[in-house]
Length: 302
Ligand SMILES: Cc1cc2nc3c(=O)[nH]c(=O)nc-3n(C[C@H](O)[C@H](O)[C@H](O)COP(=O)(O)OP(=O)(O)OC[C@H]3O[C@@H](n4cnc5c(N)ncnc54)[C@H](O)[C@@H]3O)c2cc1C
Image 1 (cartoon, rainbow, N blue to C red):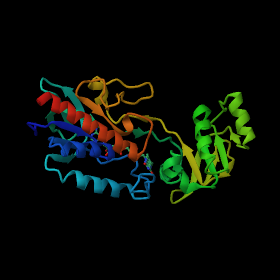
Image 2: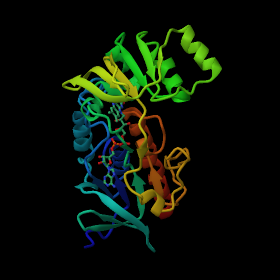
Image 3: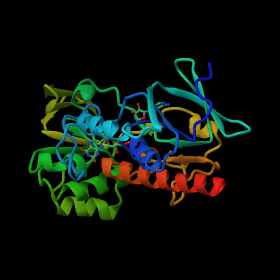
Image 4: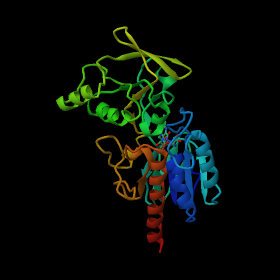
């Protein structure tokens, strides 16, 4: 069923980046439809840090406030649905959703975030976003001087170790198997007394999400308060690829400085475009996407 005759912009994803783009477009009287499945990636974390004016706020409170402010603009609407497909048409694009609806639009902003792929480790799901964390800027301060593990290997592990070392000297790297460090990295780790444990974690023992202990694949155990992980991720749908958007070798949607993808009329913002994963960056890139797309619409009609 076609439910829409005239929409300037469909924003797929209505979390921080999508709402930020919507606010900019709404303030320019653009007719905007946000399609949002309401599953932001930070939904399991009790507090969101490092976003000025909202430091330490519960993530859903920030989103709720943002939604209320954006929906004050009469030309912006939001539906709770999941976009499954988008195709090019003669006049723009057609976006179909899980509930069987479809919408026509001139332009699209993809603000869908990314989907973290959690490993199959007992206790991981329960501790993820609480004491198993991904980002020192978001959650590192809360674990200052705590017994901390970095569950990673090679350059990535070394990089996180450098950052976290400033927050806690009680650091260990657990490499999930043989370590892959260069000679220089190995020397630096030794110099700084960072133990490298060449084991896999098979279980995380926790108390209500707080890490207490890990069990290794050889049956031995160790105590930690926090574990940093770097998870693989994927895009939520094939919509970017179906629309012909280039994807970078790291799995992000390729955009230019104005958040334009390689497909004309399609923009992307937030976590799905680069590794600088933060609410601030999502809001920033959404703001740019909204303004750049508004300029494109203005040039087409003036
Ligand atoms: C565990 C965790 C903790 C974090 N803590 C912090 C922190 O303390 N401070 C900080 O600054 N940052 C933090 N971050 C990062 C921050 O949450 C993200 O950078 C931010 O949420 C990205 O915003 P986004 O709009 O790009 O994507 P998201 O917030 O992930 O939102 C994407 C939205 O799009 C929707 N969606 C996806 N696909 C579709 C579709 N096909 N159709 C319709 N809707 C769709 C989703 O349901 C969701 O609502 C954290 C991230 C994680 C994972």
